[in-house]
Image 1 (cartoon, rainbow, N blue to C red):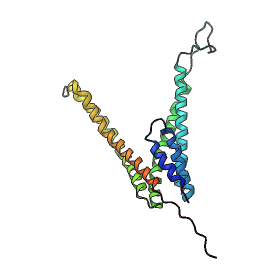
Image 2 (image 1 turned 60 degrees about the vertical axis):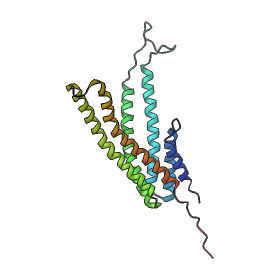
Image 3 (image 1 turned 90 degrees about the vertical axis):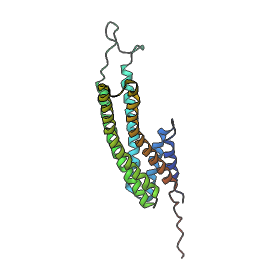
Image 4 (image 1 turned 120 degrees about the vertical axis):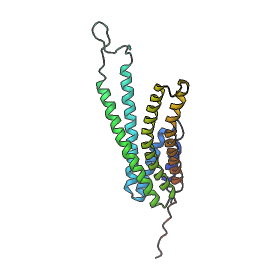
Length: 221
């Protein structure tokens, strides 16, 4: 029997590298994990797929709220826009939009953290269930991404602070300051990006190398 989710998942992870169509990749990946969960009866896979769909919906909601907020800040000169007596534009209260953006951002942050954790567990679990080393490598690379990100953030802050102090003391020439700051900022980020790319690549390989389910032969009478 054909496991359709192996192709959905592999194609979904490939689409993450393609601009303008990568927004649908999360849906394909989520459906693949849900189908894998139904096939293997592993609730962790199903939970990951559902979380990805919720994360996608929350991201869309945040974008809509943000654009709505920006729309209220634009000059409203169209006919029919509410006016005060005297022809003045009625002021808009952006407070609800700001609170909406903040709440959506917090929800999105919590969802992303939970999704990343479940994603790691699901990859390691899939590696065990399918006896697939690529899933395990992809899972451990995701752990490496988190660790490198946790190290990169303080390193960037320290590097930028040090560059600013040295520049103020005259230890760095003004013409070399941008390159120095850029270099100190980019190398930790480059490590995180490379590990993230490798994790995605191994996920692609892992899904495409999921073994086909063996057909169950009828027992002899």
